[in-house]
Amino acid sequence: EAPSVGITGPSSVLRPEAVTLEPSVTVCDSPLSAGLTWQWTVSAANGASFGSALSGTALQQRSLFVPAGELPSNTTVTFQVVASDGEQQGTSSLGVAVSATPLVAAIVGGARVSRGTTEAIEIDASASYDPDDAEASLSYQWGCTLAHPTGNASGAVDVCTGVGDAAVVVQ
Image (cartoon, rainbow, N blue to C red):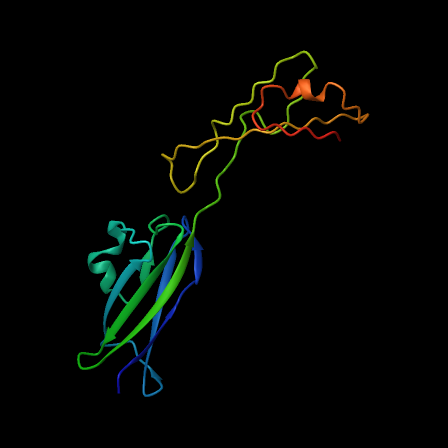
């Protein structure tokens, strides 16, 4: 009887997460692991390539370990394992949805700034980054919110002058 193969692993991950996949094999309803050879294949729905961690002898081990950051984001990666006892073989596949990590928006000096009404405010978001791609070029969209304890909106538009796509909210 051909081995029955299954794969235990996550159905979805974020790109910076490591993944370990464990196959299970049964023959005649009995677990089997000794005397088997293993062959993994890995493919991405978007045709993306993989790093060296997913090549050579790494694909011939029983368990498949994928280091953090090796999988392409925003696609489904299909892992397939073939277990063979030399005479018969069994195959199983597992699709893993790989999501991008949310961008990290960071304002130098903190997210809250307090100044007098005649003082200039400079906001620097250069500490923002894409955790999945350190070389990514980011674009920014700024907004402005006026927090005024009396609810008086006079002068609110002047406070937010020069801010692209500014939204003024009186709190």
